Structures are given as structure tokens and as C-alpha cells.
Image (cartoon, rainbow, N blue to C red; front, side, top):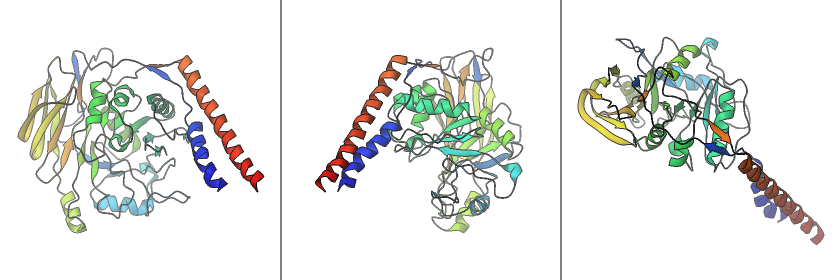
Length: 392
């Protein structure tokens, strides 16, 4: 009985210990502005060679925690059958090697074990961080993780905000330090969380992935992907494209509903973007097939919509950004990256490292409160065990 009585204070103690964090004063949000418009597709050639990619994939690993029944070689083969060109393995807090070709190795892992599923993809880390806030209720706790991870890696992806518990509009308006976001990670195609961040002046690209835990399950594989205009599947080429934004993301139905032949065939004839970019202040796009095309902007506002293979719209001087979504008859959805206002004379892109200062007083009070709570919980656990010994 004493074990049962002490388990709850022990779990509470774990949460307290893994809650230590600085408390920040965040900079107030500032919408995108400036005389120029950032075109993520500025380097796109006349006849783009898109390569299909998934950067969030789990596999079987040789340790206690396994998130997938298949080893990397099997998962890789399953994805290649679906028409993929690039696949990276992102197991939790573990780097997984490429199963066949070391020149195609992309070192990435998924950070986080928190109860809220606050996870991040960490690309090319110089060191791995195992510490995680088990119950990250505070925006400051989440921001500290982005700061620490970002200092020890090339760039960070915000994973599945649609499926992360306690993802609030306020947190999306304050958090910075990630370069890409899995903006479509739930049932909705609205991308509200991405718009909340973009509307607050936090620029990122939309990189959606399967987050596949079982490549042998037709419902899990080939459902979300990104199409990159890249010379190769080598990391340095991929990194350049991901940071520039010269790619688009796609949501794909589960074609065949279990008939793998149908699924493979339909994945071999998906619609694509034929051309996309910026002419003066006009955003344009051309698709291989007709679709319902929507332009979204500041405050998650539908700016315009049209039917057909092509679409163009002026980004007005008072409009901070615009992104495109296309809905096709077969259920496929395509998302463009965002065209956003900025000043090219002072920055290469709208992305900016937003400063946030540590509030010394609040940090001291918060962590002192955690320490006091930890001491009380330890005393409670000791007394519970001592009481049982005395009774015995």
C-alpha cells in the first residue's frame, strides 16, 4: 500500500524536477512590413525537378524504446515504393543512420518525451539534449528548449502543433527559434497555428511529414510530404532548400483504403506545381491540374479564391503576407510557403531572431518555488514510508 501511496507524490516530484526553466520577458509582436516581398521560390528554375521527401519517420531501434515494428531498411524500401526520393529517420533522442548510403545521411532526431507531446525535429545536432520539461505549461519553458536546441544544431522544426496539447494562440504569437513548422498535423487544413505565428511576425516554412510509426500500415504511410526543388538528396542541398523555402507541402488521401496497388498507382500521378513565384508585387502559381485555390493572409483571413489551374494576386502594401492552399478533386491538398513583406536592405528574409530577456526576479521566484515544492514532496514521501515501517 505504501508504494501506491507514494507513487503520486513521486510522479509530482519528477514533474517538478523537470520543470526548471528561466522566465523570459518576450518582445511584443510586430507584423511583417517593408518595401520588399520575400519570395521563397526565387531560385526555382523554369522546369523544376521536384523531389518528394519525408523528414519525420520512426523506425525500430535496438534499445528498450521502440516506436515502430520495422527496421530502417524496410521503412526506406516502403517509402521508395510510394515514389519518395528523400527519407530521413527521426527517432526520439537517437540518431539513426541511413541503411544503404552514408553520403545520403541526414542526422536528425525528435526531441521530447513531454506529456503534452511538445516535440521538435533537431537537424545536424552537435550534441543531443535529453532534458525535457515533462509538463511544459509555460511559454518560457518551451522557448528555453528552442534556444538550447538551436544553439547546438543547424535548425529546428516545430512538430505537430495541431496535436500538441496546450498549444495556445499566445504561445504561437510568442515562440521563436524554429525555422520550419509541421503546420498540417491534424484533421484540419486551416493551418490556424501557422497563421497565428505568421500574423505575429514569426516567419517559418510549412514542412509537413507523415510522422510515420508503422510503414506497413496503409493509413500511416504516404499521407503527408513535401516536394523540394533540390539538386540531390544530400544534406547540404536539402538544408539550403529547407531554409530558403523553395518547396511545397502536400496532404495525400489514403488511396485504395488498404489496396496497396491502388495506393502506389495513385501516388505515382499526384498533381504538382508547375510554376510559382513573384512578379513585382504579384504572387502567381500554376498547377498541373485544376483546383480550388485560396489565398490566406494576416489574422487567418481568406484574401481571395479561384477555380482553375492558375492563380495570381497582388500582395498589397498594407498586407503583411500571403500563402496559398489548393484543393484538388482527388482529395490532395497543396500548401505553398508564405510570401511576406520585409526590408531587403537590412535582412535576407523575414525570419528574425526575436530577443527575449531573462526576467531575473521571476526566474528566481519560479525556481525557488519549485525547490520548495520538491522539498515538501520529498518529506511527504519519506513520511509515507516511515509511517508504514512504524505500523509494521
